[in-house]
Amino acid sequence: MIDFVFLGLVIFAAVYSLAAVASVVLYRRRRPFTSDVAPPVTILKPLRGNDGQLYENLRSFCLQDYRSFEIVFGVRYLHDPAVAVVERLRHEFPGLELKLVADSRTIGTNLKVSNLANLVRHAKHDTLIVADSDMRVGPGYVRAVVWPLEDRRVGLVTCLYRGVAPYGVASQLGAMFINEWFLPAALVGTHVERLRHAFGATIACRRDTLRSIGGFEAVADQLADDYMLGWLVSKRGLRVVLVPYVVDNVVTERNLRTLVLHELRWARTFRTLRPVTYFCSLFTYGIPLSLLWLAASRGTRAACVALALHAGLRAVGRLGLYRSLGQPPPWSDTWLVPIRDVVSFVVGILSFLGRTVRWNDEQFRVRRDGRLERRVGTGNGQRLAGSAESARPASEWEESA
Image 1 (cartoon, helix red, strand yellow):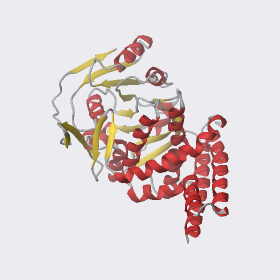
Image 2 (cartoon, rainbow, N blue to C red; image 1 turned 135 degrees about the vertical axis):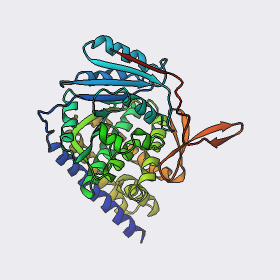
Image 3 (cartoon, rainbow, N blue to C red; image 1 turned 120 degrees about the vertical axis):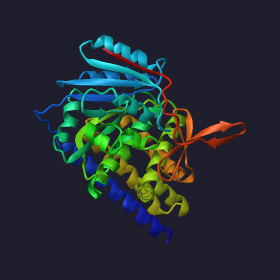
Image 4 (tube, rainbow, N blue to C red; image 1 turned 180 degrees about the vertical axis):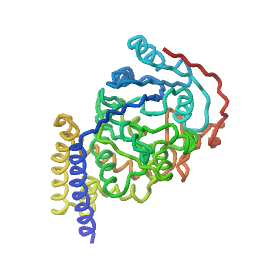
């Protein structure tokens, strides 16, 4: 009975692996469409700290081949290390409209969303793009993501991202998760059901659409703010469009502890939003399932064959993935594949064993509806703070080039 159960699971995992690679190959064969219509755009950039890659990331947004755009950078305080990077860019690109906003006004537990709510008040244009600070793009990025908004039936545009590892093993493992699991899974999902959510790499929309869903205030306490923005737009009967443009997500984790905590936050986010789907995703990890079969059956020949086949399938399949993503085949980190898959499998299981996440050195509890509650230390114990804080700003500054 054990052999039959595990045989079914590893066959399912193999079929999924083939479908995932095929989805990426088909997606990358699509060519980004561009239009002659180029509305003026405001890019909103919430910032916090400097991970060593921030300058190159932000600079890539300054190099856009686009007629009219501004970038509004936001921090909570002027002593944030990101401020020096923004000032450097303003001196390097004096002809661009680069604004720096420092505003500590807080509208909820998700401080990134509070930052965005403060930034949008300074946006000059009605076409908005939100992009995280760890993303790096090419010069055709803005043109590629705004053209679907010409259609008034489209409410939001988003795109996927691929991992880039500038540092050591932890950075490599993080990039492998994005490229070999997250991105293919996202594409498989678009074939199963209509896209109703967004990805944090890029969110583009019109100002009136954002206003119609209640602004950023509507997701001020949500952990998965990007997901929920897309869901709210979809609820209004508008389409969420995934454009065939892939940005680079620069993974800057330098140690395994930081990486695991980051991925556990992701996992508990997905588990909260789509518990059944996320649970089923655990059965797509062929190598960990084969190892469990090997242990449960005490080394049967069938389990050994399954392990060998899945190891080979992963090694060959990732070549197709990386070639489709425009990256050289990563032969040097092939030895990390079983480690990467086992870590992902364990993190997935741990996601069901608690609701606490760590984000920006703070601990939060994720409620069943996806909202965050901040944990506040009180003596020897902890308590949960309210989900919303005072909306009165401690300081507000704006500097415009």
